[in-house]
Image 1 (tube, rainbow, N blue to C red):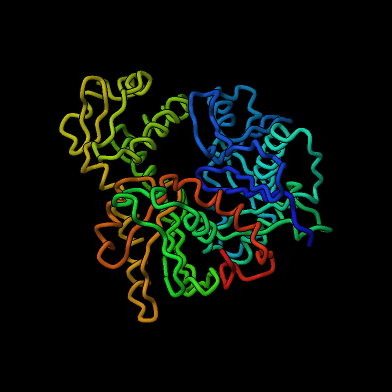
Image 2 (tube, helix red, strand yellow):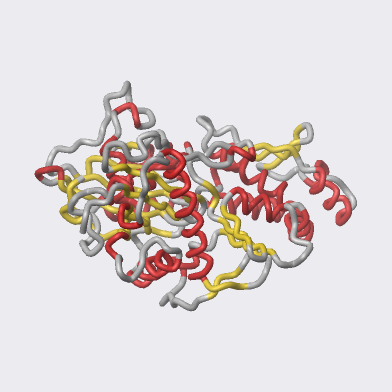
Length: 438
């Protein structure tokens, strides 16, 4: 296999997706910078929401899909998919012809939905590369694509993603070597290895860094939107990595915390009121969830508060005969303050209980194994940006190992995967993470 000029990783996540480009030849895309998303909507993010809208012959992805969906669908032709990646994790015996359900009703073949997501990200990446390297004519053979997958996925799910990548046009049957599947926590470990000491959160004066001394073991906890993905590696002579424990994980990712908020609001308002509000005011609902995502990453847990939407208040008054202010009186952990719905710090922290306890149990089981002597725990992924999660992990495990979390943990998998693909021994047929150089 000839050396590729570019390795482009696609981090296809449950909640957010993105891509990163690694140039292997001087002069190619020398002006490339990691893309940011959402400028047109007043947002600046390294990834875009994993959602797709089919609108007749048009396909919209990410923030654009959300915006188009929020504009309504009077013609009845729009089909919107969100949070569908977890259906691959939950399904027993995944089939190529399986269907997944749209948010607004109806079904579509999973392979079609996912391949169109990958096609959009591929085309977006190629357009970005072309814009910064117009003088270089790139051929398909110049690019190797690296597609990230959870380490806990079975072979059927991984093969499904290979088929989706082919259908999206990333590779063909004649050049399958141009597609590499990278395990998400392994890619994140590569990213963390490259970071300087001040690239981690709370580095105690900038002295902490992932130790590369042979024999050092570290556990990577990839905290994504859908899953918590865990792997254990040991550093070998020459900078090689060896996976020293079976990959494990659970389905307790960050979206479970979002779901706790939604269930609370639904309980307060009543299912009928809340469901009517979400259906009629999708854009306002998305704004609440975006604001909540920011609150989860606050340096200090001050709870969560947001201005009560006028439309929600009106729907509550229509069905119950009184306002949200009256409805919230006496509700423990949730209150009304000057037109805002206020969730106390204690209530917000309780949203994490199930996710954190289930993950801690997994980690304790791993770290109790006599043959393991783990020195570092790496917290990566978008969910790892939560200060509540970071503080919990430090309280629970700081006495056993050093906790490291990258400053930009959301892009760890995405950027690390591009570096993973460019490694000389990183071939698609090799066992992931076993005796492979950083």
